Length: 101
Image (tube, rainbow, N blue to C red; front, side, top):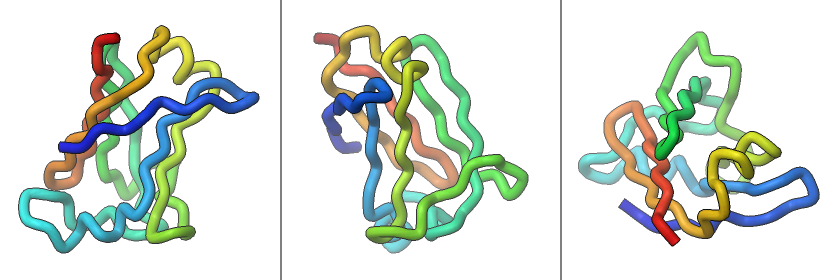
């Protein structure tokens, strides 16, 4: 588990996950978050769950070791003023959870 800041852009809040390819080699973390990997999102009140999905509409960026960039008004609405999130990597899944202010 790691802690990440919720950034701000002109488009809204941002959660930026970088160097995802490094997590493929670590114990208890996903194998398959390679650059170009397709994934799906599920947004709940407290969490955003990213799941490896060959049919997913979104893909891990092919820059800087693999990036998932969640940004926009929907992230602002989800974060509701939260400035930090915890990110947990498990097999084929990434869970982003709000940290209470």
